[in-house]
Image (tube, rainbow, N blue to C red; front, side, top):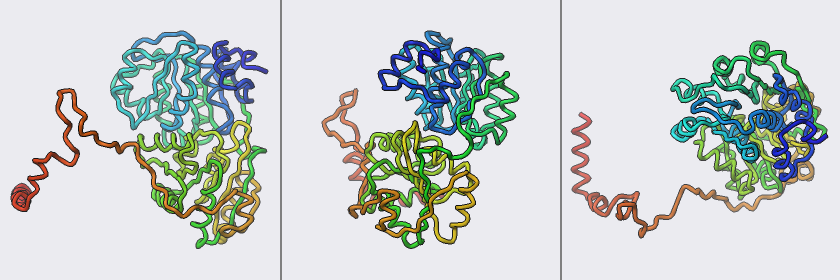
Length: 441
């Protein structure tokens, strides 16, 4: 079956064909006819199953060529994280252009001004995170009374993050009788009640279970002595191919990334403590191959949608089966093969086994040492160079002394003017000391 057979706008089919996408995934085949006809849809499937195009193609087909009034979008996609919202935007933007539609990313960590300006000019589709969207609603910059189509992507993760009240508030504000498309891996954490309250006779399509049954995904548990953990993870990180490593905490992710970089492996760290600019740059470097190893916390478990991640490593084993499944879902996407490795100490082996049993996973358990043949066979590990790798920051720009500002003056140095430097004499320091003492008394 082709995309044309599913009823999408022909202009969208042409864009997909140009991208080499000609055969729909099962979730798309199942949901698109109902979603295009205007039915409410409940789509259940693991990440990587093609849900973005499933709801995106339906929304774009139904809204093709429509114009929105200022502050009144026609369609809304809600996502739990900035990274996921950004990737939805990136995936759908080429398709929107083909049907004369525009969208705006509404997420925290970004300037309000550009978002508000876009809303004033009238934008048909918003791709948003709940927190920033409600901020703009309360400011009066967004009015959802005309919003006909609402998509809740990764609804269970939004509930896990405490956004269930926000989702209800947003849905209560949207156009009565509009279409609701909800996509979720599970229906726990109140998501089932959300479905019952806000979806009208939804068509239920489920293409995956809540267990890791992907046939192209291999699962392994590596039993590693604590004194060998750093050497083993460094060798895994030096492998060929894109590798995603999960750590439990922000501090742990930063610390591990520094250790890996010290062994000569280009690596980045991604977690909620990073600025949005840093997170965006790190994810871009990972996508483009500037770095091929990324250390992340659970903030990335569903927020990272990067092709060709061939190995996922649980450096810190998850305790929740859902965390395991969401992390594992970063590999073996779109029919590709992948490997999931969980590192554990001998004493924690039984705990990890209990967790994988609850996931429906039967991993191969192997004891490994640094440079062991078993480690190489399972992960493709290699010996790192040992020459420390240092990231170059694009934020650091060379100063051009000859550059002038608009008023024709040379810009001040960030280290201060010559006058400012001359002022830093022993006499001035003594005078500044007295001034500081006087003002603090």
